[in-house]
Length: 288
Image (cartoon, rainbow, N blue to C red; front, side, top):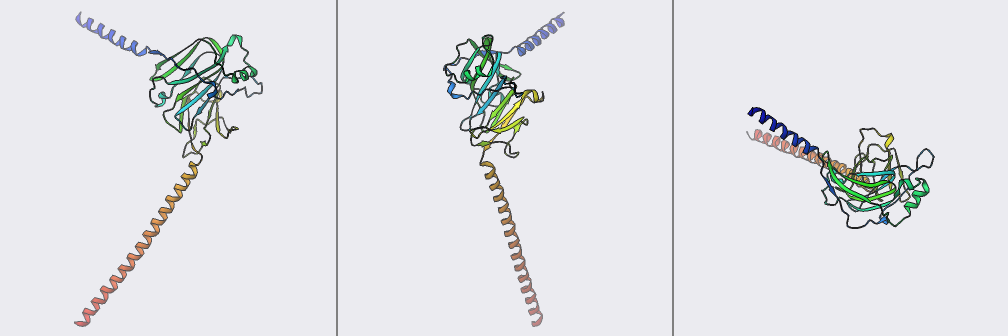
């Protein structure tokens, strides 16, 4: 009887541990300051089929002079947005991992999701007055921020995240058809030694500001490609890298030349020493 009781208690203890591990702790995030829409670029994306119909899109703007990335979502008829802060990729666990939240949205049932509507959203400076909740939770050892609305919305959602370091941007693939990363002005990517985007983007182009932009289309990506990573560098880095390689090669050649000369001089000294030794031996023989 005692053995059965002990086994029952052990089973209950294991059940408690299992259940507690499955329960996800949720914490509400409160932002003290309102967002500033002028901090962001709101670009309207339409279907590539030539229909002109707007599509869900996410654009990331990593900043070259700070460890921040600005994110802009173009959403159509959604009630929830999942955000993966950079601490999920090795960044520091900030108390408030998200800042400068901007909502330029309207209820989806009262908004026609066409190109003119989104152009109107992109020109607004006054933020939308809609109820929402912002919470964070740990899911499979990764922190996730949930932005929930009371009803489905259409428009733009923008925010800023901290990056774990400069020149290396990584993010979980968002629930968007178009995914774009815009490299800061004066920076580049694509050099296999210094850094390339992964997975291979659908297209690469340069915008009107001279910034490299990389585009992925979710429907064209493999299901296993769940992370997008872009390593970038200053545009002058390949030149400096080449100069360093040339300097190393030149240094190697100089060392080889110096070694060859030194070896030749040593051989000459050795020959002179052997001749002197041979001359001394001949003189000793004559004296005998």
